[in-house]
Length: 347
Image (cartoon, rainbow, N blue to C red; front, side, top):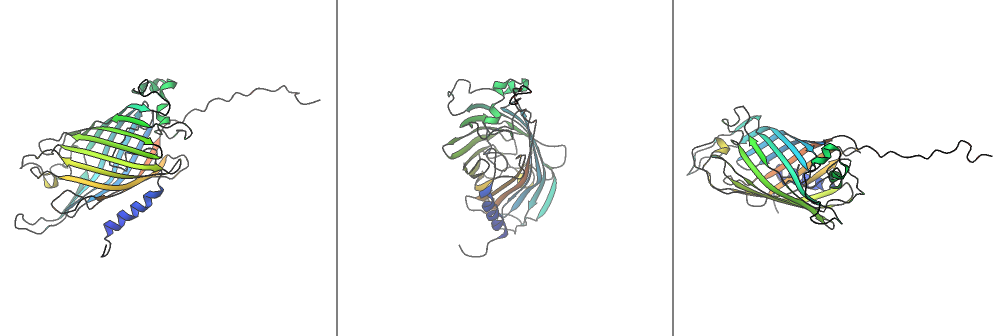
């Protein structure tokens, strides 16, 4: 490779190098684009503050930050609300024989709201039967049924999880999500894609020996302006210690149809040719306190294919953020002390 290294490429290389020493409680989810079936644990909060950049030669999309708030309802269900402060950048482009010149502009404001509910409907631990007792909702944990409250800790979802307990080696889940416009001028200004849009994925994660894996596949139902599309992602990695993990991710987003022209604004105008975006990245989490309730999130992504102003391939995507884990502390089991007679051992 010849020539100087561009600043965006250098930034991504720094992120990739830093990710080699990262800590995580689960594979998917922030900062990754691929999600997983894991949930925060009963009555626990997972709050992610992410600064995200997505840049190509023609445009840039930024979230400064993205507020991602999640709550564990029982041990297998997660409620989600996400709202970004969004910036949409259009880079100036010269006129061509087929298109006029495009002036540059930068607009910002409140992004779209995302509502979601995740359900890990199956999980398996080493030594357990593959079917009996593996399916459930985990909602009995809300009523303090002990047999139902162990799942989150065993799968590493709860900050109070015990590293000495057997970990989940296979789990499946689904994560329906609804994208909604807020009562602002974000859509007419071309800041965000018009909604509503419904997304329905299936997720799986687990481990084979030293290798951890996570895959998801979902369908965006789109609308009259936003095309329908398939999302597919996968990450592979290794737990180098009880607190250190690193993962490689491949993610693919492919339009399933082409919408009629004449609707939408700016980058979200309808009628464009079907697009496909394929990326490869590396990232993870770094705990910054002893209780592992504050985690640094890092992710760097590059396009798998050639990047041009006419396709949707990103030059780079970067995620830098902070994760906060909150929730009730586990009650310690009472210690039974056998009282000694006052004169024992004395003559």
